[in-house]
Length: 125
Image 1: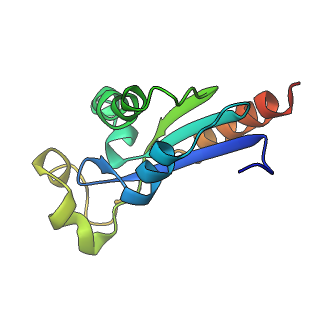
Image 2 (image 1 turned 90 degrees about the vertical axis):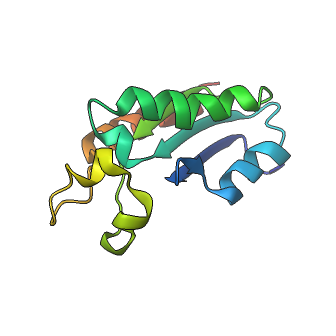
């Protein structure tokens, strides 16, 4: 990490939790003198009526848990659930609304806009 001034940490959400490696990375690293951006990818975050749930429970909950983590930019984006995983990881709030052919609600324009904003912040002195 000594070689980097800017760091982006992200996690997909599995069973309502950050992936183990991503959370461990946040827990074990110090980000002193670094610009840090954090985002999650969750199918919930891509659903308008479930976005606040994803933002509070999947993003803010982790950031509040690790108070040494002070990101300059955060985001919660929609996600993709592999079809074979749908019955195992999606609760009834999602299963009933996901058409057979639709299991990806990522908004690539939103993701790209956020990435450009992060790039500008990272390039500021």
